Length: 288
Image 1: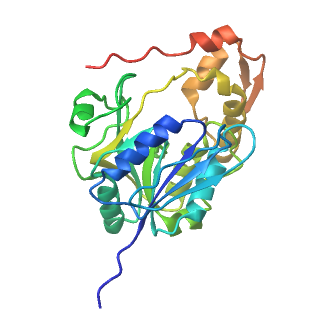
Image 2: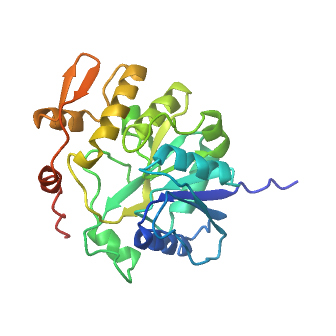
Image 3: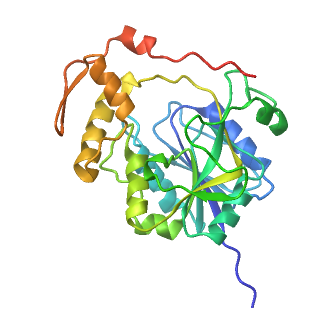
């Protein structure tokens, strides 16, 4: 008796980035392995997110409320999914043609948490018509996360898990309880998920070759506009794992006189000014 094919659900969460979402869907349309469905969770975008139908079903769920409920949105997407395999893609990612097939095969071969390679685009890339070969020639790899040329490599540092593009078996995700919704807003929820996966005995694998393109958008370093969320979530992570996450950002906040640290405690001393936030905006990279 033939074994039933395990289905693949692609999940993304979005707030107001409809242009990025359109390119994500276009990437899925071009995929050599068509996903069985796309689940979109709209975090109170204004106007609400919509999507043209594709050769695979698209379902849009809406979470109303303030801020960026990243953990809750990803969990809602996973609960709504019908596939046994999940591919989480951030809305600013364009999947390469081979990504869905590679993730599906990798999840067949491994019971693991699988991160896909991300290549970063410049501000003028993929803003209209595009070809994957051209994007590959222009995109830049991540300076810290090193991926194999092909195949997979086990990564023992759970802190290097990232939620931009990753695969996991749906039942594993549900058994872990998904992302911890005690982490509200921006920062820390993905690192906590990586640590809990390691504690559950789930290997972290970096998958080479097939990956995704990260569409350019404004980046703030440090992300001063998320100071309150980062401080709260970092304190929760410290209490749970006895180490500080997002250390570079916390160090920058402290150097700027925004926070004070004493042992396990962080105190917000003042809020950043509008000028400080503007000055933290990073200049776009120069495309090759």
